[in-house]
Amino acid sequence: MSESAAANQAGEQQWTDESWTSPDGLSLHYRDYPGPPDLAPVICIPGLTRNARDFEPIADAFAGKRRILCVELRGRGDSDYAKDPATYVPLQYLADMEALLAQAVIARFVAIGTSLGGLITMMIAAGGADRLAGAVLNDIGPVIEPAGMARIREYVGQGRSYSTWMHAARALKEQNEAAFPDYAISDWLRMAKRLMQVGGNGRITYDYDMKIAEPFNTVEPAEAVDLWPAYRALAGRPVLTLRGELSDILSPLTLTRMGEEIPDAHTVTVAHRGHAPSLEEPEAQAAIASLLDRCE
Image (cartoon, rainbow, N blue to C red; front, side, top):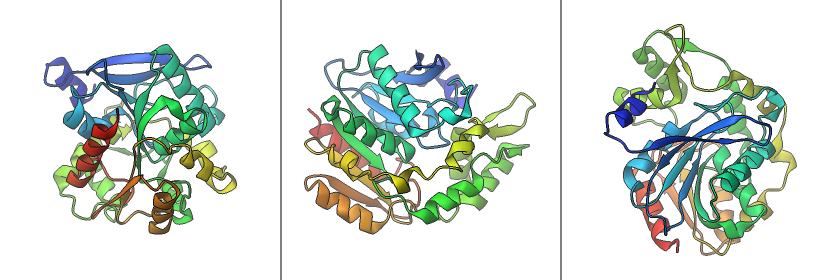
């Protein structure tokens, strides 16, 4: 059990652990923070190796003001691991999200997608944007920089483990310091406890199925597909794109074009951050609060 789950049981946080069933029969998990039933809920969709804990800053800031669902894609967190690693691909994640919307009877929602979660958000828009009351894309756009993809391939699916949380935090610092140059060791510890769990052997491991790397490392999804039409499908509702100032995934050139393609969309650059902002940053939270105010 994570520290956050223990805190929830102690009454310090308020969410329920819920699940839905994927089209191929997996049980997939999400945290459900209650909010006003008359407002469109927020659905938070995480990045490639992340889980529901990644959106604790959003829940801390906005739970109660909006219902917030923090989902865990197949193979992450408390969601089932896929029987076939070939299903760890965006089209399957999209089908899983469509199943969530149907089973939870959610007709309209605000999406907050980090990295892969932002790609899924654009894909949802391409299939029916009227369901989206607004969208936040966190450090992702229709063009993904090859250098960033290459960096991610260097670590995803490596299966590293650590004897203590401090060892885990120091390893994260070594790997990611360029993206979070002002982080103190307490920040790295917090990140470690969001990304990792204590395994059955007592060692600290990443909280995802290492097999997610198999299709990711063999397919170039963003280079063969034109994602600009999916992004343009978001037009007509509040849209916010956050970019880490130091990002190697979303370039300033792409961010500029995103503002041109949807002229009333907002773009915000988060200082001293690479891929991807944690959404704890004051400028990120202020921009998200502004977007939520404009939704409905």
